[in-house]
Length: 280
Picture 1: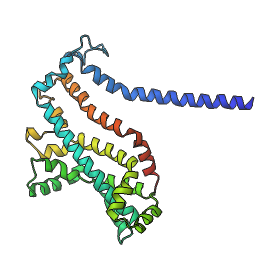
Picture 2 (picture 1 turned 60 degrees about the horizontal axis):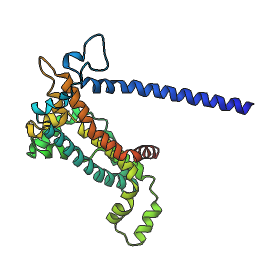
Picture 3 (picture 1 turned 90 degrees about the vertical axis):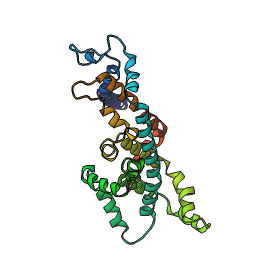
Picture 4 (picture 1 turned 30 degrees about the vertical axis):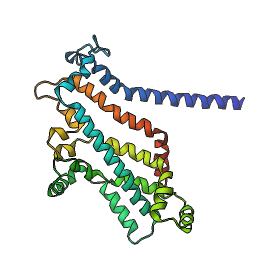
């Protein structure tokens, strides 16, 4: 009887926990649902009272009209190109630095690691002017180099990969060295293939951060052919009037690349975050 009551108690606790989580998920989803439905409404219908979830008439042309007003396809390509290149470079360089900090012994290793972590505490607004002056001195303004090179490495990526590589078995590395493998061969043929969970998590974070970046592209480029998607979306906000239906339609379209990246890497995302976060 006690075992039966204990089982019912655990069942009720689990049911209550899932009910709270489902309710929380629904509350978090409501704004997204509102944006998607509003993207099919007429502009004057969005803020009309009494409030209605569904449009009176579905305006599918809201997804077509923005492309005739601005070169949105170019904005999408620029954002995706910058995000993909920056993500790829972070996966390589952050993994290299994280591996060196985790597996090699050299003077000042701990101090260097804490210095890198310390840079994470600086908001981007603090470094935006020095970074602009450096890029300007190289003659990279109004070019893809200005959008890509400053983000090729990240302190967060180094931290994440270092935490992952702390748990890598040194015996495997020593065995590879005894067999005559070079350090680059060990890194690319043994270490990197085992780090896909952490690399997947890093890829999602870096891609999202650069795909959604607004401040630095706004400062670094002013040519329309180099404009990224966040700046292009902001252009739909007019001084006297804003086409909110088209603005929301473009916002919905901008979610598609991020969802694709997440679906590609989601299987190992949670594993990478959990495993990388518990190693000290």
